[in-house]
Length: 143
Image (cartoon, rainbow, N blue to C red; front, side):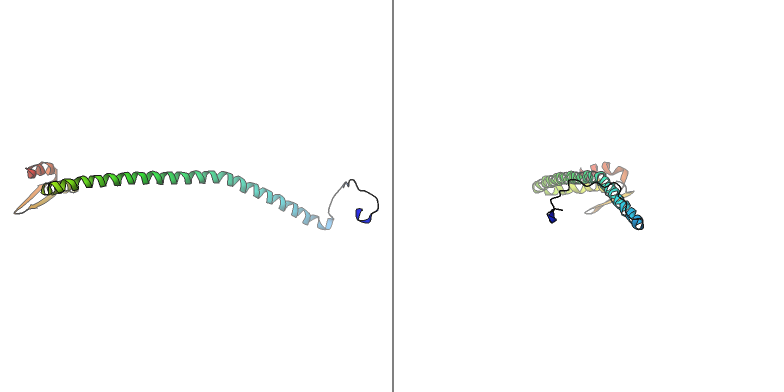
């Protein structure tokens, strides 16, 4: 009405009964149901997101924390092994033959406890003994 400069001013329009024509009623109902389905699916997706995201973030934080703990553990173990090696090296520099013999015997004591028989060869000598007596025989060999 304003575009015609009629001087009439519309304050309000009230529709009493809004129904699409019968020919398009089914299509109109389909559109309404599709919009409702869309909202329902969006709400379900949002609920799923609100459930899954915190769990995924928590799991990711746990994995990162576990990795950092494993890293710290491995670093500490590596430093310990390096310190042990340095101590053996210092001992080796001071007493080469004694350190070699001790390391050899310690290795045998660790590696062969499940063997039924152990053969150790020294220059000109061969020792054969049962693994149950390893500590006893090693003690004898050290003398």
